[in-house]
Image 1 (spheres, one colour):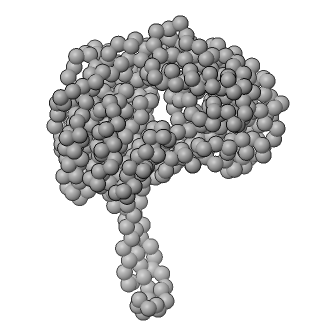
Image 2 (cartoon, rainbow, N blue to C red):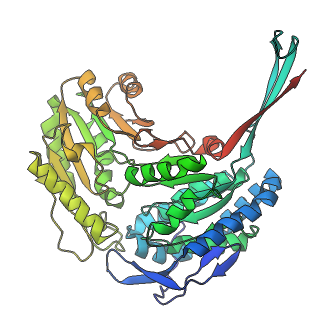
Image 3 (cartoon, rainbow, N blue to C red):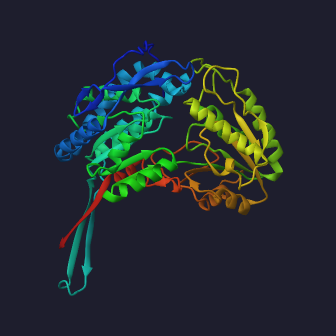
Amino acid sequence: MGLGRVMTKIDPEEQWKLLIGGEWVETAGTYPVQNPYTMEIVGHAPEASLSEATDAMAAARDALGDWKNTSIDQRCYLLGKLADVLEQKAPEWVDLVQAETGSTINITETLQVAGGFIDRFRYYSKPQRIDLSELPVKQGATALGPAGLLAASVYHQPVGVVLCITPYNFPLTNVAGKIAPALAMGNTCIIKPAPQDPLGILRLGEAINEAGFPPGVINIVTSSGPEVPAAMVASKDVNMISFTGSTSVGKSIYESGASTMTRVLMELGGKGALIMTEDASIDGAMGAIASVWGFHSGQICTAPTRVICHRNIYDQTVETLEAVAGMLKIGDPLERDTLVGPLISEQQRDNVEKFISSGVESGAKLVCGGERPDEQGYFVAPTLLADCTTDMHVVREEAFGPVVVVMPHEDDEEAIAMANDSDYGLFSYVYAGDTARAHQIAKSLESGNVALNSIQPHMEAPFGGFKMSGIGRDRGTWGLKAYSEIQAISWLA
């Protein structure tokens, strides 16, 4: 549920600072943050230096000892206090977050600054038991000792300093999903937001201080280039990296952290398959597929961008999708009936346009879209490519924009093979008249998550990807475990 909008004036000349050790730190330089619709400057974010990144890591390291020894009840109390502060403060951030992300006002109010953003802090504010005590087991005599009964306890200990690198599509919601379980487990955090829209996260820093978190437990470092995050990734003072973003960047982070055996949790690219059997409800699948166009303009890694449709309903599906695309209003994201907003930047718009052109050049049929709407801002019209094949670049790679590709299949076996013929495996979908059949198809998919006749994710189920879509799982109690090291202590019973 959204919190509603409190109109606030955006001051592009506001002086923004880094949060390091509980203090606001002024930087020598800044870089501009642009509104992707109006193309005006929203503000100037702090350009952190390597020295300031080092200070942030030192602050997180210094705070770690006391924080991990703070009781779980107190840590969770502060997360609840932060949720309380956010419920009061977040409505004032709507205009700022909308301006820097370019998301429609409806998405901004219900998801960017509310919904899953605050709910994640509230969820992890309730202490949960994940440690285990094992019943005694009979141990035979070995060269190490005599026979006897052994008992054991398994504890989840904090990893240490966690570097949280967040994406530009849902900056606040994503960072909440990282720092809430990490803090509950007793870790300290450094937040490195995406350079395109860091200002809302700096506002979050104000709420963190107001909630009363000890200095250094949460630090925020912003920068426009890769030098600062690369230095933190490679540092032995960082024990874990939680990253959401592209697979190419994820691979680089994985390689850089290898020398220090840095733990990683990565949610990377996706190329979601949506299988439609011959008895699937076309109307039912339309809302899911159209979400690629109307839900933040396809800038979401779980989007069902590959439609694998049974040949018997293929033509009808393509015709219906073309009609739906024409009904989606493109334009000013502040107008309530706008469904398709701009992409985050000129560079991303150009990337998506090149992506579409490559599909047409390789033989895909451009059913609709592909052009720039007659609107200011970085728009690409909802695009539908039909008659695609699994060897095409547009089928194999992620556009991260409003592009849907459609391919026909003859039977369930072929549909499964086509869906699995991908380097990615984050989130897939099955639409079928028979739920048992849909469930059987789902179990055969190489995908970390599969939804049946629905696009709704289960927010307490483990979330993460197979193959090049990432490493590890979070959400629910899985999130607590993700930010922990497992320690077993055994003794003679």
